[in-house]
Image 1 (cartoon, helix red, strand yellow):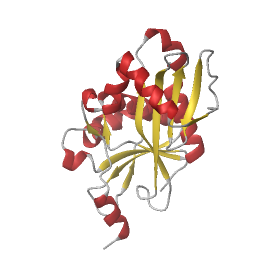
Image 2 (cartoon, rainbow, N blue to C red):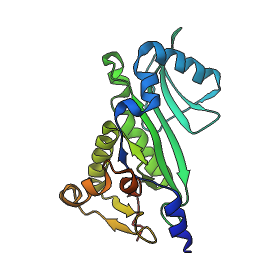
Image 3 (cartoon, one colour):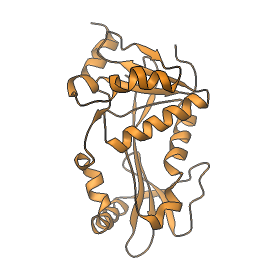
Length: 215
């Protein structure tokens, strides 16, 4: 059996749209009291300071990375520390043949007005830095509605920035990549093709943003 085909069939990888309430980390973080408890556990498990290019950590906050996994958080410090932004990464070699890719498997930001200035531009800054460092970023296998909207925004940004955007269809042999030329094409042809509620179909399709032309 073709190796690429075997890998793609065994790794379902695309935006199956789930309700926000189905994201366990969202449930733990959105209620302030639970957020504080969850944040304390995270800090006690071991972290190191993290510096994100293009982002100045505001006074009263600290940016840290877990020592146990590729999870990063911006935390409001104090006696009751609170997570205001979280992102966790997964690296793979089986999505784009012969290339390493990066996926944000968890992304969360607070809706609290008092932290808005601190987190307003952070998701895009972090995503841009990922693309700078790892060249290829792909969408997660499951996304909430907010996750889908973020990816729509980043696809539009990538196309406007002369990056390369593709759809990878894991329902076909060798997982072919098809380039997206503009947002009109994306919405008319690829939006419903990629994102939807059929787990057997939509978990096999993914969006790819690359700094360089892949094929």
